Image 1: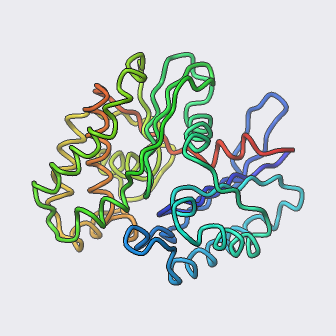
Image 2 (image 1 turned 90 degrees about the horizontal axis):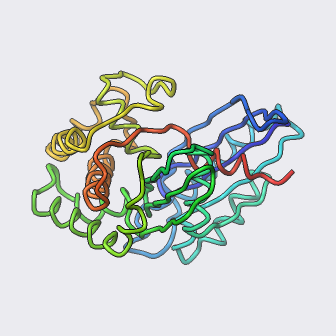
Image 3 (image 1 turned 45 degrees about the vertical axis):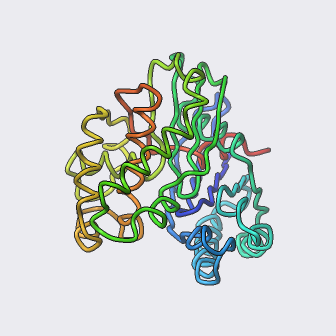
Length: 300
């Protein structure tokens, strides 16, 4: 059976198409990455802007084209922070759904965390903490054997923090400190819930981009990046370097997409601040995530 999972986020729109066997194993047929940045300017206006909608419509058409060879595909499409927080999110979801040809479900932070954990951690027997740094929110979940015991979503993300703290480059140390303290404060009520974690995985663009830089790769390679381990002190080093660069210098980093380069510095601040706040020393980058969880949970 062929299923597809689509994740429409604040910065990216991602789709995976996979063929599932009866025992739950699967093989990936297609993995499509788009960067429409729906969340551009939402913090200031409260609405998804026309330019972002136009970019997202193009992404939905490309998804539809990619699904065309699979007429019997079962699709679950979910939308996250940008659509659930914007005033016109439901209207935009309806518009995009019309082009995609499948319904778009706006999910809350708890469901986002559950599906991302399912897609990135799965049924691992070790108590695992998942950190999913999005553009508009960051999700945290802990679980074991495929069951999430606790999750939370905080309205802090790489796009939001870039617009708030990184209007000038290099990013000032005062803004980096303020951003870190904002993360620490947001996570303070939840630290005890994650204290049993024996392993940590980092999901989405920021951990994967940091892994790519850490490994010195000139282009994205899921096989080489998935499972790459990084110490918190190394993430701090990479973060300090990225925050010290101009936009042109960031965009010149090999393999770092120009529509992601500007937000990775603040994403890295969120990651190391999260690890510090939750007492985590090592994180494993995972290239899977919400879209995989949506595919796994797609209704037959």
